[in-house]
Length: 182
Image 1 (spheres, rainbow, N blue to C red):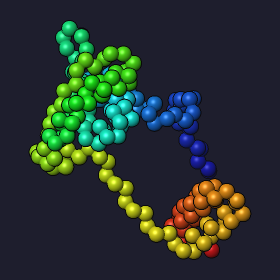
Image 2: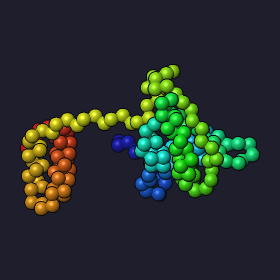
Image 3: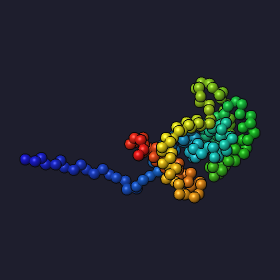
Image 4: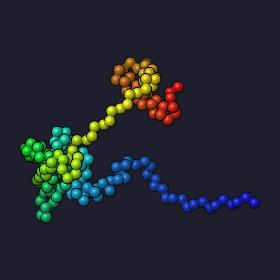
């Protein structure tokens, strides 16, 4: 006698919003972590290089925002190395204007600098520049020839180069999955 199939499991509730950006899913957690350090807007942290400028962002980073009891403007604390502090001190008024432009109102009244040595309690923590990207491995010559042949009929040089790069990436990925190219 054949067995009866088990009753279907209750359907899980599914949100019907479709795909969502990862930033939307993590927005609450990011906001809570930022607010714990006084950052009402996480944009100040995530887009620091755009707000401060590449030169300033290379030598400092925001650490915290503290608010006075009277609510008369906040203090932004920046972490920098001792050698860059005097140069950065002269640029604080312009930097304060840029940060307040990010907030949309005069939220930051003062900026203070906290100096740290290039190496100290936590070795390597004072580096403000991102780590360089590792060099890409040389492409397989057979894959490069096949990619060049696939973009051969395109007249525009920039488009041809972009298509060769795309074809090379697709073929290299396919090669790692299936073995050598045919």
